[in-house]
Length: 113
Image (cartoon, rainbow, N blue to C red; front, top):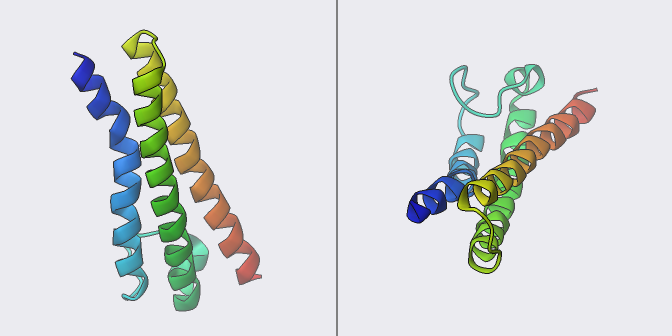
């Protein structure tokens, strides 16, 4: 059961790293109606589309690596019920993921004015 919590706790950080590579590649391609960092601003402006994807890519890669290290450290050094520790790890990861989305959206919105 303990191994299952390791997998669950690392899903978001590893997903962030994977999305960072996807966004880096996606930035140079045409605007997509199906996938990518899609906001009203990025859907209308190719330059904003590229900037949003490159910024999100950098932030997601950095955050994913840091969160992976934090999750591993917390799992290794904090003795707590595995379910509660998993809840804490996933809450932290989700907050970081949402914060990155809000930050990139605000940067794109400011540039579109």
